[in-house]
Structures are given as C-alpha cells and as structure tokens.
Amino acid sequence: MNLEKWIEEKFNTTKYTLEKTDKGISNHNYILTINDTKYMVRVPKKNHESLGLQHEHEKEILPLVSDLDVPTVLFDEKEGIKVTHYIEDVKTFNECKDKDKFARCANLMKSLHTKKAPLFIFNPFGKIEFYKSQIKECILSFPNEENFLEALKKEYKPNTLCHNDFVQGNILYSDTKDYLIDYEYAAKNDYRFDIASFFSENNIHYIDQRDQFYQTYFDGEIDPMIDVQVQAFERMEDILWGYWANMLYEQRGEQIYFDIAKDKEKHYRG
Image 1 (cartoon, rainbow, N blue to C red):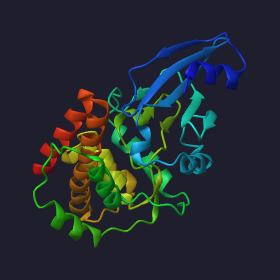
Image 2 (image 1 turned 180 degrees about the vertical axis):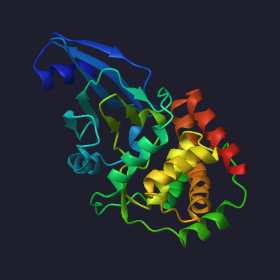
Image 3 (image 1 turned 90 degrees about the vertical axis):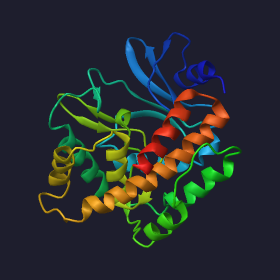
C-alpha cells in the first residue's frame, strides 16, 4: 500500500507534507499537514495481519468512545489507516508530570468501562495460544505457565468494554482535556485486564500510585483483594505480551520487540 497515493486520493490533493514520528510500537505514525491544518495518521507496520486484529471491530467501537478519543477524520477499515486531528500541547503518560495523573487515567478508564460492551471478546487466553502458534523459535520461559493460566480462567469474567492496551502513548493529557486513544484491541474483556495493563505497561508498582488510581476508579470503596487479583492479571499479561513480542521480533527483527519480550519474562518471574 502506497501511503502517499492513499493520502492524495482521500484528501484530493498533492499539496501536503508528511513527517514520520517516533510514536507507536506496532504502527507507524505521521504528522500530515494540508493547508496549515495538521492531522495524525496511523499506518500499520508490515505483518500487522499476524496480530489477529479486525479493523471492522475498531470501526464499531469508535462511535462509542468519541468522547474519549481524539476526533477521527478518516478511518479505512480495509487498510487499518486512521486519521485524527492533531492536538497541540498534549503529553503522554510518561511525559506528564502532574502528581494526579494516576487518578486522571482512572477517570478515563472508568468512563470507558461504563459504556455498552460489544458482542466480540478479547480473549487473552486464546490470544496467548494464537501468538505462541506463530512463533518458530521461542526465546521465553514462564514457569508454571499452564497451571497458572488454568487457575486464572476460573476467575475470568469478560463483561466490560475494555481498551486492552494501556501503554503510555495511548494516554494523553492536556490542560483542557484528557484522551484515551488507539482502539485496535478494544473489545469485551474482564475490567481487571485494563487495570493490570495500565499498571504493568507503565511500571506502576508503588503502593501510593496504585492507591491513587484505586481510590478514583472505585470511588473510595476498594475491595481489599482487588490488588491481589490485578497482580494475577499482570502476570497473565506478561505471558500474553511476551509471546506477542517474541512473534513480532521474529517477523520484523526489531530490537524493541526482543526487549519487550525479555522485560515481560523478567516481570513474570518477579
């Protein structure tokens, strides 16, 4: 797929600039400028189909989350290309220095989780088996993996619209509005998966930071066992995204995927 040709056809112009950014792990991201108006363009990397994503599912989710997402300009479900407005002066979760950023993310997540869940499910256990099946040479080892996953299956309750990918670049803060972006993986799941995703992907281990999140998400009424449950989901996600990264390292040969895989293995082993 030729991106320049796609832009010219969709925007009916040849007068534009396109600047690649360093954002994104499984997608390329560009700043597109047309007549002094800026847009963000998300384009899947090669072998994106191996992730098992269905862009028609993302298309179904986007209207449900329009109050949380950056406004969409174009979404091509065939190519998986998404064009949004460019928001000036936003900071990612890592870039944000506000001490209340954990609570602010809790409000985003809580808002998402109150929306009607779709029929399709993000099944992490099935995803683990799928990613493992794509790997030719496994570089990971998760002790007691099978028994651990079988036990967690008994506690798994997929009944909530979840984002399923709370990496720092998908959480954006500004002075006027906070955003949750990139709904490629969004589907029905267990709400604890999202909490675990936020904690594990952003290395949130300090009790006071986790407590700030819990206090906001649960409106102060916190189940004393919730953190134990979330930690179990974090270990499951180490397995899931570890195999995901192993698969992509084989397919794309990029060091970042090797590093992610080994980080997940290290975190699982504790």
